[in-house]
Length: 393
Image (cartoon, helix red, strand yellow):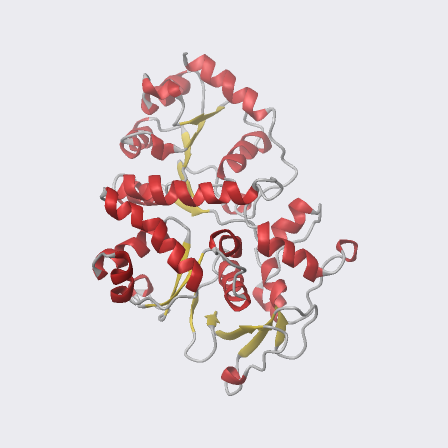
């Protein structure tokens, strides 16, 4: 196989790509910069978005899509492939699953430094490895973007052929957000999303099997490979994930977790950090300042409600589902931190999340506070329907 065969495969692949629906991140990316890096956990749609851009940009002839896990790269290097394509007039190269190629960040750095007119976009599902490459070889060179799963809005647009635009937080807080009448009532649609709407492969009959594979590959392959974790410790990652799934939102007690997993508390802290970096957990921190990445984690949540259904042995706790949804939707566009009174603080607003009978006593004395209720369609005063926060991105 030579470069022309790779180019032909790229063209064939583009023929099957649908461009009617594009993810929220598409318009946020500056596609014309020298080096873009698209991060995101497995299955959120990074590959599709890159292929869509090749088509929508009208630059198919000068663009090449490759996946670093191709057998082609067992006998060819990334840099030599990019260089040969560049000499043939290529100006845009998209490298998917780049973490599958040993030493990828050094060769991508060479492309950036030497092939001055070549625009490079890389993506991968091993967030830990990509972040490491960003911090070491590609520091101040790559522009990173992180893709999250489908919002409730995106799910409606993709699954139900809607055309809903994102709603700003202040618009949501007005309590006047409604769905297009032709979609029907929002609560049944919201229930669909909570169970199986976060990942773009939601229409697959084996959805939960695929979701379990996403989790297993991340915990059993990605994290151990990129952290040089011992086999015995790696086996405990999935056990830790199972413990968290049964008890989230989880207030970290590293010593207790260490006893359950038979590891020391430092190892527990490292394991949680790795899983969070891999995109399967979200840590809710106490502070909101320039050093907030070092702030104490108040609670640990799974990254999205679908994981709650996938990983729990029984029906997930409704309160956990509500908070997990709110956190996952708000964290894309806003800084979300723990509230001293209530559940979350977002852009200075305090939120208490609960069911339709939630009274909001915890935030009754807070001036800028809202009660977020599940199982209601419409808002009133400072009471906002939970589902409306899914229209934010």
